[in-house]
Each structure stands twice: as C-alpha cells, then as structure tokens.
Image (tube, rainbow, N blue to C red; front, side, top):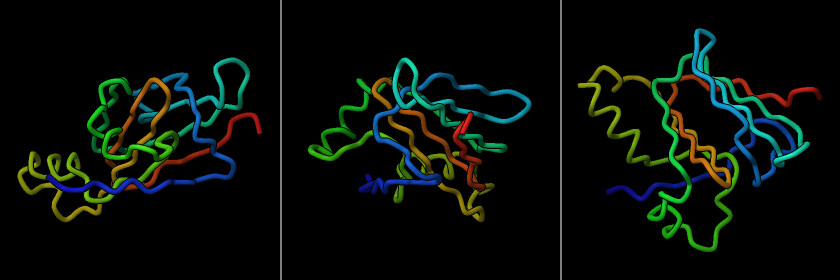
Length: 130
C-alpha cells in the first residue's frame, strides 16, 4: 500500500475548502461537477473533464481510512493525489494500455461527497456567473 499524498489544488482563485456538490453530469460533453460555496446561495464552480479516464464518487462517511490518515488536516476542497493507490490500480487494470500516459488523480472533497477523477488532461475550471 502506497502512502498517498494530497496536495491542495487551486486551479482558480478563491476556492474555499467548504464546498457542496450541486450536480455531477456525465454526457456527450464530458464529465462536469457543479460545486456551490454553500447550500443556499453561494457561488457556483464548474469543473469539466472533456476526456476523463475514469471517475468515482463515494459518500464521505465511508472514507474513514483516508480521514484517519489525515487526522487534524483540513481535507475539504480540491486536491491532486500523488502516489495514488487508485491510479496504480487503474493502470494495472488497463493491462499496460495506460502505462505511457501521464495521468493525474484529482480529488474533490465536500461535506457529503468524495468525487475523484483520473485524467490525462487537466479539467477546465471556472466560476459561473462571475
């Protein structure tokens, strides 16, 4: 088992650590996550992956192992994950097809959701209505 390293990721200015997932869309335009800065009237952040290799979402209450490894740290917000167990698993599952690709593991941790992506290309990130 690797020791995953979570590094805060700030693709745009003023991204808070306390986010709420408003929506997750997967369609012909790619995969998009809409995040609010609070549950009622906050600003909306859109993160769009045109060609993600894969993604997953798990309720934050089931990430106890991750939270215990990072006890005392603020684990809300956006991260890049180095030495990723999941990325290693995905590459192994591909039977070598993904070995030459420079893939990045991105993590979005909200109060309810842990949404993660593996992608060769960085997503487009923008504040909506700004």
